[in-house]
Length: 283
Image (spheres, rainbow, N blue to C red):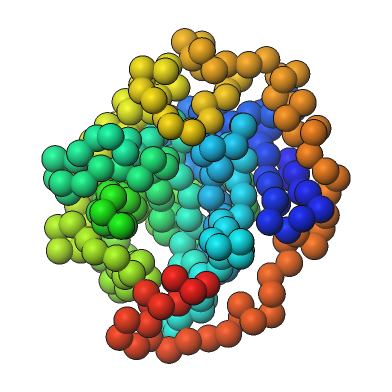
């Protein structure tokens, strides 16, 4: 279910469960879809340009447009790539704790759910929830904070059966991992921008899940993070479905123009030294 306001900047996508009740994609979707299969909530889809994110500080944490200096943010078309080169989203019930100094990177978390680059062939829908196989992870250091990027593949993808670790990606999709580093190359990396394997990635996800559990049960101060949810039994932030609906009903009526992308976003740029950093910061 998508909720829009009359202002483009306040565009929101809210999620519902099978009963038609509003839920938080951050807190109410289980981290696991099955044994060794994780859920991912898709925000920005393959080939799209609009930067979308789970609104961690908004009640019910809808997916919303990223805004910087009062302007909507987009990713540039940097030759040979068109917008996002994967389905980009986050694993629910995870949290990169800004108070936890990671033993591997030496930096604290960025206070967001852990990010996912899903490399399957399907172009997913915004807000879609899919099951994924974890393959590896990249450690990006963004403004002194650890910003993990999990590399994963949709369990329903034709290549999923033959893709079980990061080295399989190198064999099945040559150049994809290098393209991923190039695409996000606007900051520093840990491990010399080398991808860590599946086991390392899963251990990292489990750690962020533990941090989320501390957050949602108020054992950790989220400092502005909204933990409003409808299903976490031990959470003092749990609310009933009627209260969740009231949050959405209070929004202005839908505005279809909120989804429109400005024509100048379709410009193409050729890769040059330091150009990626410039495009990311100005888009």
